[in-house]
Each structure stands twice: as structure tokens, then as C-alpha cells.
Length: 197
Image 1: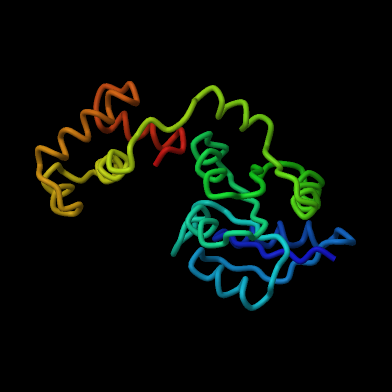
Image 2 (image 1 turned 30 degrees about the vertical axis):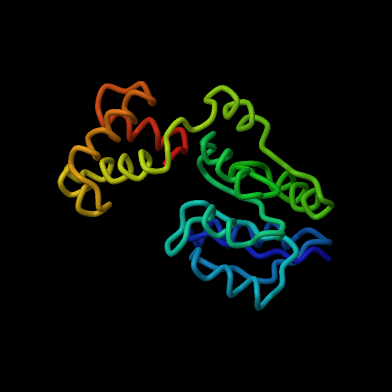
């Protein structure tokens, strides 16, 4: 019996995944959590064989949680098949990445394959990741652009990140150029769409 933990902040999605996987004769859902910051405690308590994580959850993102579960079999199950998410997930060592609209049989198959030591990646997403290429932004450019996307001014970003306003402008300019955008709003949207932020 493969023991599975599901972490997703959407009750309907989490419940649906649990119900579908629960129909499989060799899969048992041992726990469900709605927040990323509850996953580590649930893993310690229930000792699942495979952990299914959504990316965008309150508390901690699925990618942040995956980094804190080294050696654990983790599958990212996400609504958005953003190529940058795949790259970041693979960098954290996840064993699988599937999109939520995949058929239930594919998700169950992914759980079984990951349990057997395989890496399972949605093929369409893998092709898209190859087309988009690696994230060109440095960590600091990403930090600054992330703040800018939320509407922060240069002064606000400088204060929050303990940088000078000139340094913030330099990072924004560099990020805009690397993304191939006309302004910081467009750069932020493009970077988010590609999963780089």
C-alpha cells in the first residue's frame, strides 16, 4: 500500500484528489493539509511514501516545502503548467510534476512510478520548459521584480530589501532587459507567467 499525503489549499481540489486516489486498490491517502506550513508536521506524523504538493499555498509554497523534504518522494500537482515552475521544482529534487487537469489514472500512475524510483514529468510541460529556457534572472533581480509586480515604488523596494534606490533601478533595468519587456510591469507579468518569480 502506497501512503500518500496531499497538500492543497483548495478544499474541493484536495478532496477530489483524495477521493480519486482512494479508489485505487494500492494507494491510501493518509493525510490532507490546506497550508504549506503544515506539511512538515503532517509528514512527521503520518510518514507518507509520496507527498503531493500544490505550488501556491498559504504559509509556504509547495516549492519551499519540497526544499525542506530532501530524500522524500514529492510530486508537484499544480494548476499552472509554467515552465519556470518545472525548472525550480526539478532544482529542489522533486520526483514528479503533473498538472491538475491530468486524468486521474495518470496521477495514480505517477504516484506508482515515483514510488518505484522513477521521475515523472508532464510531457507538454517539459517541451515548454525547453522552449522557454532557464531563468535568466539573478536571485536579487527576482526579488526586486517580485516587489515591483505588487506595485511597490522604487523607494518602497529599496527600504524593504535594504538597497539603495539606484541599486533597485539597476536591478529593474537588468531584469527588464533579460525578460525582453518594455517596462517593469510587463517584465513582472512575463516572469510570473514563465514561473520565474
